[in-house]
Structures are given as C-alpha cells and as structure tokens.
Length: 97
Image (cartoon, rainbow, N blue to C red; front, side):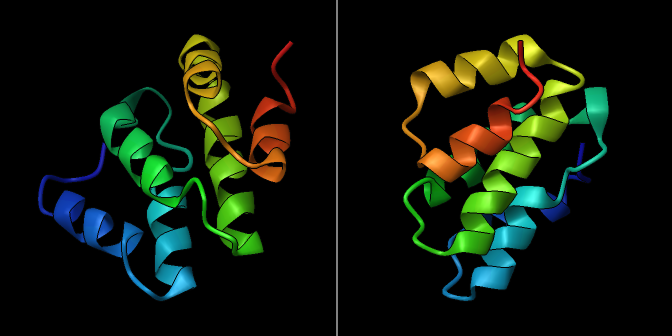
C-alpha cells in the first residue's frame, strides 16, 4: 500500500486537470499485489471512470487487470458494481475467466 503521506497526493492527482497525473494516480499501485490499498484504487478509478482520455481509460483497465492477478474476486465485484467504458472493462477482464 502507498505510504500514508502519498495517499492525499494520489487523491489530488486523480482529480487534476492534467491527464498524465490522473493516469499516474490510477496506475500508482501497479505491482503492489496484496499490499494494494483497494479503497484508494477504487476511489481513483471511480473519479476517472467517465474520463474521455484514452490513456486514462487504458490505465483503469491496466490497474484492474494487474490487481486481478492477486485478487480476481475483488476485480470481478468491482466490474459488476461500476460502470466503466468498454476499453477499461475489456482491459480489466482480459485474464479473468
């Protein structure tokens, strides 16, 4: 999980006008595996779920796909409970069976 001091930074980035900061907030926990702060992951994705920017939508799918390697049930539940664009959903579900 990100250090406590980093969480507010990522929350701010998730809402920043700069698409690259929004994207960075979404993918900040790639590779964290079981240490992923799923509440923070959900928050930064929810804030950006309707983002029209390709790279942000792709990052959402990437972050979910990466976390699915560790906790596929959490990702399935997230996908069932949230409206995401087709690109994000397709990328997220790539390796879910």
